[in-house]
Image 1 (cartoon, one colour):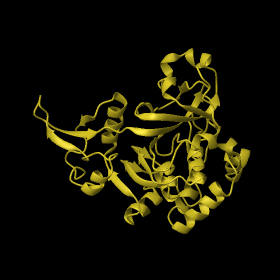
Image 2 (cartoon, helix red, strand yellow):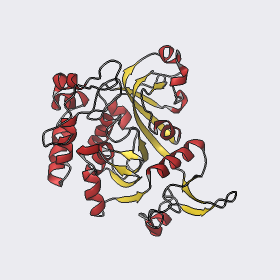
Image 3 (cartoon, one colour):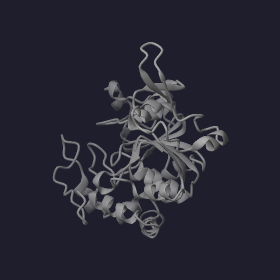
Image 4 (cartoon, helix red, strand yellow):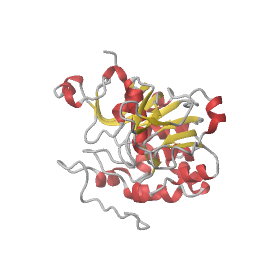
Length: 324
C-alpha cells in the first residue's frame, strides 16, 4: 500500500477555500488543532463546517475569518468557554451562516452520510422549536446546491404512526482527524472515546489524519478490532506530537487549562483575538514554534497522561481567572 505521509503544510494545501469539512474530537478533546492553525496561516476562507460537539477548534477558524457557514449542535470548551466566544460574536453580528440542530440530530446526519443514505429518522428535536427555526432560509438553500433543500421533515412513521423527524445526510469533501497512532499506509488507531470520528471519516471524500505517533501496520494489525477506520478511507497521515494542544489526547496528554482560559478571554473581542492569532499562529513559523510559545517542554511535561489513566490526575485545572 502506498505511503501517505505528508507534512502539515502539504496536508493543509489540500484543503481549498470554499470546501466542506468536518473536524474530529469533542469540545476540548482530540481535535487536529495543529492542522487547523496551518489552514489559518494559509488564509483559507469560505469554509462550510459540519460539527456535532465542537470547541475552540471550529471557533478558531471562525475567529480567523475562515468560515462561511456552520451546521451543528454547539461549540464550547466546557467551563472555559461555555459558549464559544467567536462563534457567538459572529452569529449575533450576522457574519456567518448558522443552522442549529440537536446533538443527536447531527449524529444521525453523519451516520446517514457514512452509510450512503439520504437521511435517517430520529425523535430528537421533537417538542422543541428547532424544527420551526430555519437558520439558512429558502433563498440560501435555493442558491447553494450543497445546502440541504430542507432542514428537516417531521412526519408520522408509516409503520407505527408515531412522530419522527427525518434529517438530511452530511457528506463532506474533507474530514480532519487527530488520533494517537497511525501507520504511513493510513491505518489509524483511536484510543479512548471515538466520539463521531468514524462516522465523519466515512461520510467524507478525503480524510486527513494527524497523529501523535507513527507506527507500523504490523503493530496495529495485532488488534484489528481496534482499527475502526479502514486505511483506504484515509488519504494523508501527518505525524504531529501534541498536535491537539490545547485540547487533550487520551493516553498522551491532558487539556491545557491555562491556554484554554487564555483563548477564551482573547476570543471575547476582535482585538483580543487578533492579538492571540499574532502570538500563536502568525507569530510562529510552525508547530514547533507554537509549542515553544505555549510554554515549551516544561509546560508539556505537566500535561502528560499518567500510565493506566489516560489523563493527568495531578494537573491543576484552575486556570488564572478562576475557570476550572
